[in-house]
Length: 199
Image (tube, rainbow, N blue to C red):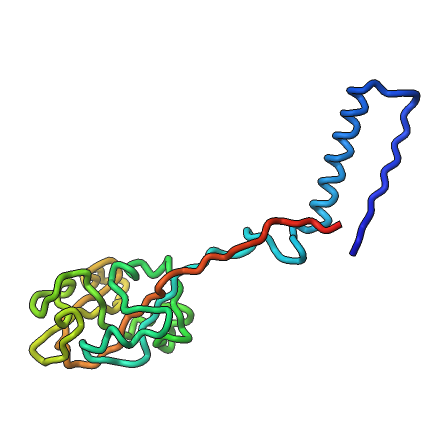
């Protein structure tokens, strides 16, 4: 909708040059504020970037299970087999409850009843503790090979069960079928066109 603002100014006699310039500047400032408020800080009907929350990286625990050698192939498009260090602090992430496993009381958050294979960041290993073993970098599903498993422990009042941050970690034979922790490849960034004011 086109809007017009008319301002009529009356002044006795002729104003000096500096007074005229000052009056023009004042009128322009008032007009600018009026247009800004009328627009609702919007461009072509779209909200400004400040009204959008910043995107958060998504992750989930797969619904399907896999043996150690197949763990890296379970995550859906746009996601990959997660390292513990990528999902260490879930409070800065968003759990994808549509893609992921959920429990009866998980709400929009991470279920504490799910265990999943987790990448370690370590070299190829089939012996050692959690954080080291990785089913020969997730290529081995034999009973003699072991891999690292992560779960969020439900016992909040017992810090002794939390091995790293909030995570409980253990090892399991690679021939066992488990869910897999998956994390988003990257986070998209919102883009906005420059602010354009309508007449």
